[in-house]
Length: 198
Image 1 (cartoon, rainbow, N blue to C red):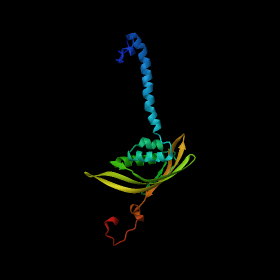
Image 2: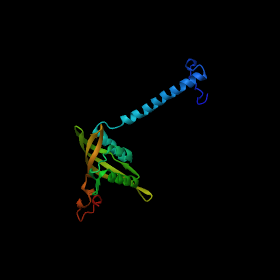
Image 3: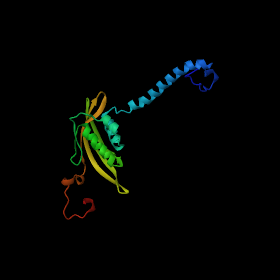
Image 4: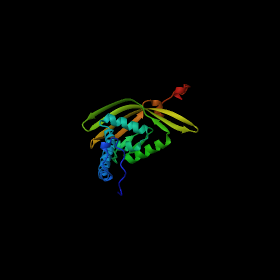
């Protein structure tokens, strides 16, 4: 019969269709149920992996940042045009587009990122949550034929909102935990020859 395939071996003879015509009638139903099963088993883990609480959402964002996973970051961050967030070195991001451009640039410029969280505290009230976090932002950047590793001790605070059942980051502010990374605010004694201060 056109459009029908030979049936595979079902193992035990009692499980095999009696003839080719019977198989051609059973096969489309079998294939439909198999596809439904496969798609439902694939879709379930994706839904289950969505953060169900604000702390999980923050941790997932940090992991996505380290993995340079812009689609996940986009999904977990609000895209409101008037949201303002602040990064280090005087960076200010207004809306999702500016932030996305900044992240793309960072992902291109760094070979690898590591962001171990040292401390994270999250508070929740209704559909709002806020957090305070300390983490190390570790960048690996090509330096000629070598790779330069830089550890930036960071501090970050942020606000999340639950929208349509999903926690999204609205706004955040990051700074250095140590004044030595703060640029002009870091003061050094004029006569110091300590390598730690240079």
